Length: 457
Figure 1 (cartoon, helix red, strand yellow):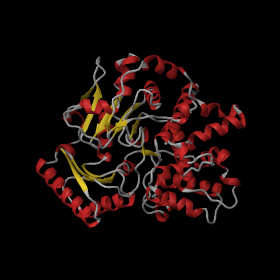
Figure 2 (cartoon, one colour):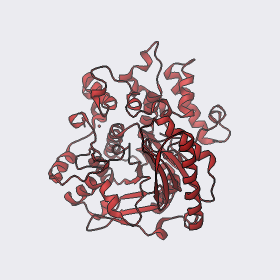
Figure 3 (cartoon, helix red, strand yellow):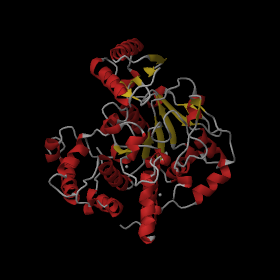
Figure 4 (cartoon, helix red, strand yellow):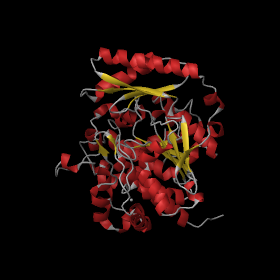
């Protein structure tokens, strides 16, 4: 259950666009020169924050609090939980037994005491996951694929958020999540070979795409240049249409071409689509996307799925979605794909209704083929397979083990499609693309520091 800086331009880390509900394809606007400049600039705010004094440290942590739409909050002080408010997902998006356990401990412990104890329990849990004290107290706790130094992460976070100096206001869910993320970033930096990202809500806004000015472009290229494979693992699936996937990451592919990245670098980028159903790579020298043949990367288990069973699953999923929507009096439009089926509300609704619908399908649907029923925030879909299967297949294809892999996503609740990845690698739980930007800057700073350290026999 593991969880993973340059000052943001114009106060926003990422940008995206959508026109009339459809993906907007921004024309090239000379990204080569812009990217060259951005990639040359150091983004090691984390490494230098101690040298920049109090003002620099505050500016550093303020980046984590910058919401996508600051005008919504005016000039009031930011909260670490503002991101959940912005996305209208409230406490339903903040569901995690392990984090809730840490919050509950604060009723009888200080924040430092909580982190000291839990760090010790994690060490014990890694040695004997089935019989550990942590397992007894949090039965649903998963695996920790790397050590996590929670005390150090707490002290780093406490400098600005003053958890140890607050007498009446305990930490909230988002603050504990941030501390876990910081600890995981520092731990993963030491062994990282593959980092994967959810797309919507993690790399860019829901339903949008990666434009030429998206700050994550230079971070992704920086990771690839640091000998780290990067993959986007998304529910979006377009069988036989690599150009549809290209639209989602056009800004990134344009940067590959403008910077004339060699094949040794572009070979480190993949997209896993449809949760686990389509794998794409960068063709050379065109630097366009192409599908990887199924037999090259799919596991024997995935190759054994029968089309008849898949059709039966999707038919039953559609019936369950429509039955649930009828019970909730929610008018919807059905969307059918080769390996997925979903419903999109045709009238305004609330997040809790979509949550109810997704969990209803999870509880009622059974199939010989694995599936993922999830609340996408604006719709509810049932996909064949899940991200855990896709990520495990990608790890085997590239030859990496769980301790070398990190997944970044925003949907780790019971109805989210990122939660399955907890079974196969470490994770970073982010609330929005701005948080992704923040933590990846922190990761890049760690990678640079590790590279600069001389090897001692």
